[in-house]
Image (cartoon, rainbow, N blue to C red; front, side, top):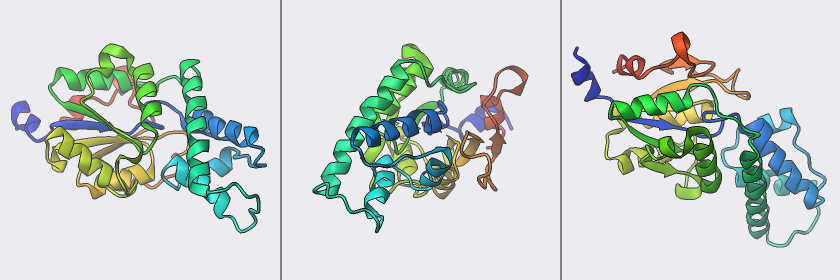
Length: 243
């Protein structure tokens, strides 16, 4: 089959953010959560292992809610929803400071693959459950302003009502990009994200991250430890071969 006919079946490449663009979870989000907990004197600290368990729950606000749903929690913080929104805003500010300080470098191969896709006429987007401010800043930090401009859509935060592993955000991404889900390939790092991509009817490349080394990615088209550079790189031609 010719490259042109293959190209007609692959029209969009959609990236998750956390763990895909950069190793943000353990040394970004977790650090920011813990600083907020300390500022508020909540007596809560999420170590590496504990936060790994929290990641099974999609969304930062949803993870924080588990603190107040614990039957042993007795402190009155007023309206829990309002309090969580306050904490999450402060946590996002701290997280963005970590990015701006250069403490969360981009993962290998991400910028290269975005540029390669753009040069081949592939539509590009990010679809993440994380706060849109943080996603935008980390994307600009990892990609640079020029390459960031190649992204046609950034879907993040509470833009959907159901978070991964529900496919809603990926189906919305396809709709916004004007393509069929079967014409999309997703780059994910977690089992929840992978399951969301497959439920949307999309192909999925998994680039394992700090917390997802032991996740089950059975059925993924490609599973690697990083998108790589040079001879080890995941390329657009490899993705085309999946269609």
